[in-house]
Structure formats: C-alpha cells, structure tokens
Image (cartoon, rainbow, N blue to C red; front, side):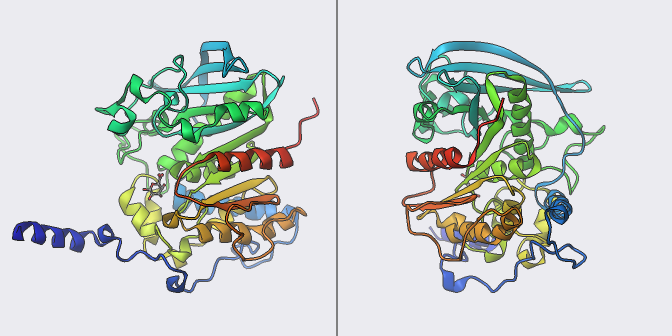
Length: 424
Ligand code: GTR
C-alpha cells in the first residue's frame, strides 16, 4: 500500500498535469494577456485595405506554418483515384454512395486513403460537407456496403475495435455524430475519411504520409515541418482535388467540418486551402478555435505533452510562454475571411474553453469588417442554444464534448444562409 502511495506521489511530481490540479477552469483565474493585433503588420504598419490584408494574411499563414502546425516540405499530388464501389440506392434510395480510393505516390513510396461519399439524388451538382471520422468510415452509419479500414485504429472494445483493428461490430458505432439522412434531405452531400489512414494518431512519424517526403535516413519531420494535424489537413485538400474531378459535386461549395482534434484540423485545412468555401470547427479547443493566451482548460504545454505529434516541434517552445507567440488563434479564424466560418462550443466542454473559442470569433471580426461582413458584435457570450449566424457563426449548446443533431442543424442552416449556388 505504502509503495503504491509513493508511486502515485512520484507520478504527480513527474507529471504535474496528471492531477489536473493546475487547470484553469474559472474566469477569475485567467491570466492577463494582450493579443497580437490582427490588422497590424509585423513591421508595425496598419492593415486598412483588402489589398493590404492579402499580404498580412500570408504573413500570418507563415507564422502558423513555422511555429504551430508545421509546413509541408514538398508536394505530393493525387496520383490516381479509383471508384471502388458505387450505388444509387443508398440512404433509403435518396442518395448515391461512392467509395473512392485516393492514391499518392512519391519516388518508391505510396499511400492510399478511402474516401466515402453520399450525394443527394435530388441535386444535380451537390454542395458537400467533408470531415474526418475517428474510427473508420464504416462507423458513421450502419451500411453493410462500407469497406472496413485495414489501418491502425485506437482500441475501443465498446466500439468493437480490438488489437487496433476494426470489426463488423463497429458498423454504425458513431452514427449519433453523423445524421447522414438529415444532411441528404437538406440537399447536401457528405464525404468522410478515416484520419488514421492519412497518419495514424500516434507519436510516430515512420508511418502515414510523412515518410513520402523524407530525405534519405530521415525518420521525423524537422522542427518547423508538419505534425499530424497539418498532415490530416493536407489529406482534406487532396479529397478536394478529387471533388474537383467529380462532375456530380459542386466544388465551389465544399464545406470542411471537424470535431475536436479534427476541428483543429478543419480550421487549419480551411486556412491553408482557400478553395474550401466554408469552414466549421466543433469543440476544437486548444490549438483550434480557443485563444492560447487564456490558458483556460487545456494549455499549449498540456497539449504538447499529451500529444507531442499533433503540432510541429517549434510549438513546444511556447509551452507556458503563450504570450511570446506572435499570433493567437483569433488570427487563424480571420484567415477564413471573407468565407463563412462557424465555431461551435459545448457548455460542459470546459477543457476546450468555450469562452476562449467565442473570443477568437470576436477578435477575428475586424478581418471580416474589411470585406463589409459582420462577425461578432461584442464580447458577451451568447445564450446557450442561441446561435449567431453572421458571416462568422457561433453557438454554445448545452451538453458535453460531442457532435449532436443540434450542431448539424446549425451547420446546415449556416450553409443555407451563406453559400450561394454557383451560376453554371
Ligand atoms: C483531448 C484533447 C483535446 C481534443 C480531444 C479530442 O484529449 O485534449 O485537445 O482534441 O482530445 O480530439 O477528442
């Protein structure tokens, strides 16, 4: 018994975050901070016009690339796509289902990723939501035709994932997060991929997409090169490359969506690739929509320690030094301007700092004003379950860290409001 107590104390000493004791979960304990100015160049000059913003924008993209998500050290193009399966009687005969294998080759290395797509039959050229799933395409819906992934998946006996392999038992296991029929009925398509096929979610850079760009003998990216989030974001852009080739998809209305770590991913994808017409972050928290400087809930240090592979190595220099960052996450949100961006929080998801997510939307608003669009009018957190649908959208819903029907209903309404149909 004494031995266990000693061991426990040692663990607390070595991993102070383990106890969660030093987590800020109350507004009164948020440290004072000053955010870097969105509309001021690094050389101190003001940004007043859309033309100047274009330059400031690339300055900001460069900062996020070099010190947070990491830059991609080369180009890997979509080498080929194969429609492995297609059916026109999916989702109660309302949708077409396609399963497309995307293959990437570089020198002698290659990687393939399965893209699952549902398109409403009622629309000739469908706009669509694209977002990663956490445990395999077959988990989003009980559809016996969806291929099972062969990639490494985090174990979850309750989801039927054993020895890091999915089983039949996990079909539809996360369908509460993917109201596919509702999306189809609203006239949108849905495309998804399993994020682990692009890069398995572990601190190991010998697998997934990274090695395709290694020089000889290299085993991990350089300090300013892509971590896993940037790799996953890259994968979303390659899915876009496919959408562009598919005549039944409206590539001018592709909405990139993600939850939690995959919400951080959708934000970076939308920032790095302006072809995405709309961007949605659901409960993305630290390294996503939440302001790093608030240090509320999960902090830069905590996230870098728990998930050392998500960001580039340079980001670790800011553990406990958030104030030294030349940017903060409101600037990431502003990179979407003038495109519509929606940030969703959940009341009980304190770890993701709902108010910090809202404040990012507020402080990104001057970027939208340059384009005569409205963001958030003031710093007052809106009431629970009362969405704001300006060009920047936001809601805080009741409940926990999750994606719910309520969230999706708002995403669809926001898309209906802000995405205008192309003229062709
Ligand atoms: C948590 C992590 C969060 C969030 C979440 C998720 O453990 O601390 O940043 O990304 O995982 O992705 O589910």
